[in-house]
Length: 278
Image 1 (cartoon, rainbow, N blue to C red):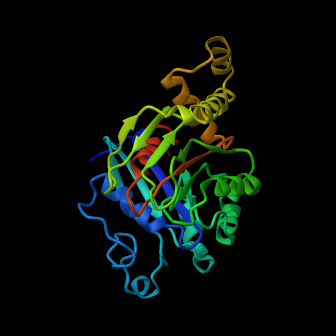
Image 2 (image 1 turned 90 degrees about the vertical axis):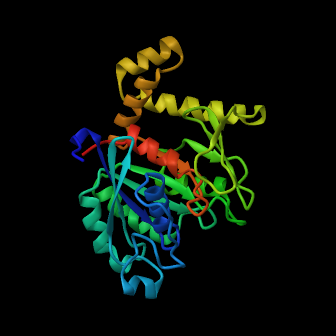
């Protein structure tokens, strides 16, 4: 297929070793229909880690380019090594990417590798999304991970989602952008959309207001419209968020379980709809 530049997204996966970048990239490829079966790092059959030395070491050494066709658009995903021994692969990938996906481990939070990689994100002025992965781990602490991210990377880190039940029973995400709850089947994949429970409504409303205000702050017309109407239309919200991300005034934060394939489709949808094109 031939794609117009406006319909292309170039993203690079970054993260401390063990954060789950390769698994997330594999799941994204599966969700887009690029592969019919998900491989695993343990079984040494992922699309990204395909060399003998990567199989032997059990981690990424080289950057790998993958192509996801998403609703007629093209998302180019670069999976990079987490170890700083191979940081040259990260630097080369950042130079050709429009958005960085910084993957955090919900049980480890912001780790040393995360901070080292962030220095390169800043040096290239690359727009960035944070993804808190492994929220299904028994020791997952989503809230602590978010607080660590804000403490290290500033108030620009803006949560768009949170897991309703982190831990081994994880299967639901509260999405404050779309104001809906996603409930996933046991084997992951496409979730069922449900109303946000009353017990979570206050937290979701507060998060939604913060998102809308962040989108409006980048455009005087949007700000006036927000003050007059108290809300923004979906198209205005998308335009404002795209501008905010491109200008690096916000770093949206999402959550998922790449292993269970829960939440990756929503992340891809956001990349497709909101993230800047080349």
